[in-house]
Amino acid sequence: MVTLMVTDGWQQARDKVVQLWRRVRPEHAAAVATELDSTRAAVLAAHQSGTTVVEQALREEWGRRFVELLESHQDAEPALRAILADWEAAPGAQVVRGDIHLEAHAEGNGRVYMAARDQHITEQ
Image (cartoon, rainbow, N blue to C red; front, side, top):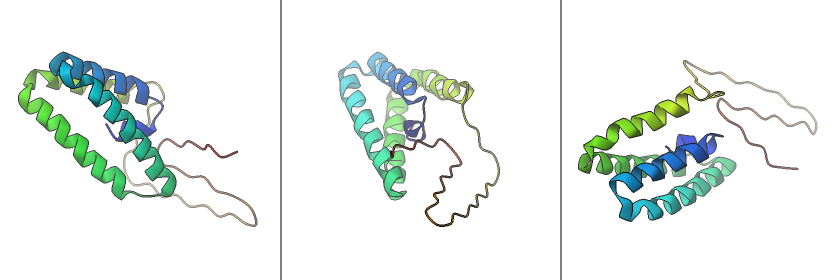
């Protein structure tokens, strides 16, 4: 889920996860929506600063949440798998397999922007 937070498909995935929570734990759905939004903000900030530790910690945290959800509501597993499958099958979804080697050289005031996944540049 954390990986989806920096992609164009984020909003749809977020909405489906909130919908899932509404179905199995309706009393927590609003809090999950807020927490997903704040987690996304933290992931985007970490990407901008180049910090990978934050993203890994958030992956683990959300992994625990999904495990807890599935332990108490095993019937939620197909819905969660469907969310991930929808994202992977979406037009323009990026699938990276194998090793990636990126190399760039810039001179003078040149800039290089490289990504092995989605890339969002917001500077003007």
